[in-house]
Length: 110
Length: 118
Image (cartoon, rainbow over all chains, first blue to last red; front, side, top):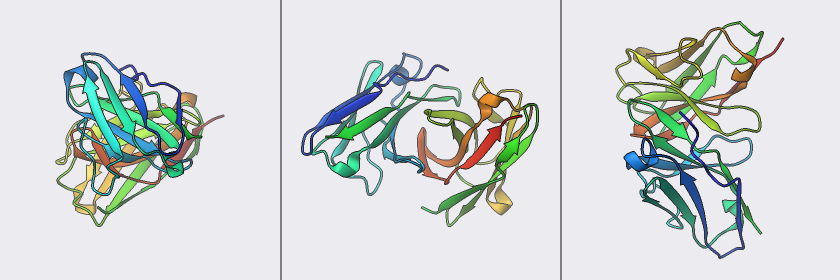
């Protein structure tokens, strides 16, 4: 149950796009289409922005999109806005009712 | 989609026990699996445990297996986490969350801080 690997930080200017990667193994990310992404503001609980690799929960902006290739999943935030600044975590199902989270990425909007 | 409210956190000595509760309101609680996720101070999220909608045996991260027990009382829409043999490294904010789909966690509670220290 090793954590999925994310870059510690990512940044972009308002209006730009930024992509955050999430690398696992064939036992988690690569083995299932059950990757989700969570945004967490300081002192707050996480909230889902993507589930099942590409799906957006109700109310989440279409600026958020997800994808996966092999053992790496990605979250892309388009048209960056200041309010997108937050910590982002990926998560994957790993079989046998086991789940794993990523190491987290702090997104800064310059 | 309702709310989840955790309680039961606090300060406990190493080797001690604590029981967390999570009450669900305004949601379909009984038909969904539930989970606990924790976050150590300044650190990332860590899945701790999950349980099916019907209850029964739980599933655990290796870091807590044999020390923590998850359970639920569907008649009162409440989730529990019984923690024994607590270690300093168990210090964290513990969140309860509903598993809406496989690996889709929503909503989340506000979190309950557990501090293990002598």
